Length: 102
Image (cartoon, rainbow, N blue to C red; front, top):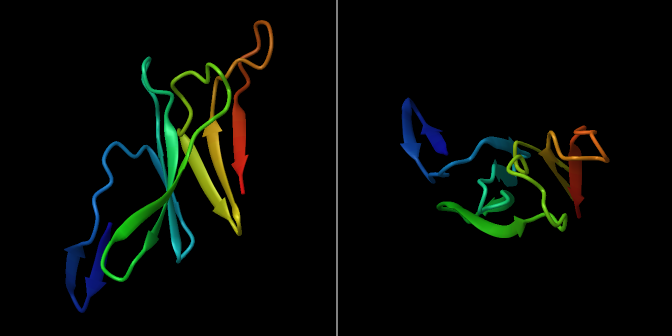
């Protein structure tokens, strides 16, 4: 994350492995996709005046979400959405899911 002051960009924070992000002016939501040993997560961060500080980690309650949780994210008011494409929705169906957090 960078800020612009005059004509100079300054790095404020660095988000490793973020696959997706959404920003609403006060909060930043980043999504990190999983691996076979890590299911992925969303992270809500707020600006503390100097840097972006994480305030919430969003994880799925689905027992085996697969590695796609965190592929897409969105903020809307008090809700955070984390997408997981390709999640098995039933026998032979891999439709995906959107997890909603309040």
